[in-house]
Length: 403
Image (cartoon, rainbow, N blue to C red; front, side, top):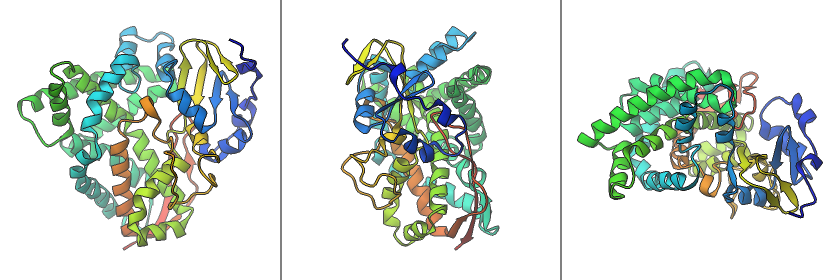
C-alpha cells in the first residue's frame, strides 16, 4: 500500500476528552472541527458522513465489540462464542441470514397493531406523576417504556418486565468492555435463552398475535433453512439491543425539548411533527453516538493506512453534524428536511434491525407526552452517564403542568 498517513500521524483528542463531561454530542463536534480523521487512545476516529458510510458498508471492517469481548482476560470461550452468535455481534453469512429472518417480521406495518399498547404504557406512566407536576423523567417516564413494550410485542404478561429489565441491563453492561461485568452477563444469557426457548416452544404449539409467532412463521417460510435457535437469537438481540437505546433516546429527547420549551409547545400544537421530531432528535443527539469497528486486514482509506487489527470508531454523532450533508447541522430543528438519512440507527449491513420498533415507541411516547404535559422545563441539573458508545441521562429532573 502507498498510503502516506498512519494512525500515529493523526491528531489525538486524548487530552481534550480526559476531563469532558456531559453528552458527547455536545462537545465532540467542536473537537473534530477541521479533522477528517482523529486518534482517540488506540482507535482511529472517522468523522465525516461519506467516510462513516464507507466503513460501515465495507466487509473488511469487522465488529469492534465482538473483538473487544473476545480479548477480555479469563473469559469463558463458550460464553464468547454464544455472545458472538448474537445479531448485535455476528458477522458474515450468518449475520446476513439473521437479518433476512428478522427484517420481514420487523416491518413498520407489523408494529401498527402495538401502537395502542405503546400509548397505553406511556399514559399509565404519566398518570403516576401528573399531580406532582415534577418528576425524574429517567426513572418515572423513560426506563419503564421499552421493557413494558417488549412484553406486549412478545405476548407475555407485563409482570415479566422486571425480569427482562434485569437481564437486558446485565447483558448490555458487557459492552462497556469491563471484565467485571462478565459474570452477570453470563448469568443473564443463561436466563434469557432458557426463557425465550420455552416461549418459542409454546408459540409453536399455540400461535399468537405477537412477534415470536411472526418470526416462527418467517423461519418456516424459509423451508427449514432458518433454525429455531436463530429465531431465539433475533428475539434476545432485540431485547438486549432495544432496551438501553430506546430509554436513553427518549430521555435525551425530553432533555432537548426541556431546553427548548418553544419547540415542545409547537409539538403540542402540531402533533403531525412528531415523526420528524424523532428523526431530528436521533440525528442531533443520538444515544448510540459511535459504532466500534476493527480492520480484518490492512485497509487504505483514501490515503490513511489502517493495519489489520486497528480499532476504528465510526462516530455517527459527527457524521450527523457533517455540514456538507445537513445544512446548519448544529441547529436543532424539528421541521428539518434532508435528502440524506442520519446515522443514528447505523447504516447498511450495520443498520439497527430494531429501528422500526424504536421509532414507533419514540413516536407514541412523544405524542402522549406532548399532548398531556405543558410548560415542560428542566427542574435541576441533568446528570449524564459516561460516554461508551451508548450515552444518556442518569437523572433528568423535569417540571410541567399536566393537562
